[in-house]
Length: 70
Image (cartoon, rainbow, N blue to C red; front, side, top):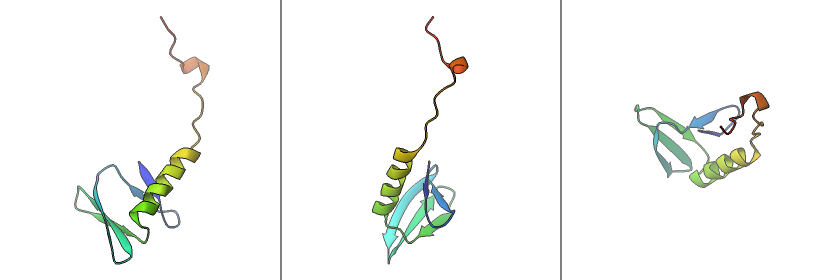
C-alpha cells in the first residue's frame, strides 16, 4: 500500500510503524529504522489514500482466467 505525496513521491505503508505530526510536518517511521517526512497532515494522507483507492481502475478478469464452478 502507498500514499501519493509531493510530485512523484509516495509513502509506502508496508513496514510503516508510526506517523507523527509535529511542527507542520508528518514523519513516517519504518520498522527498518528509516524515516520519511512530508508537509501533509495524517488526515490529509488518509484522504489521499481513500481517493486513490476510490478512483483506482480495477480491470475485469479475462474470461480465460476466471475460476469456474466444478
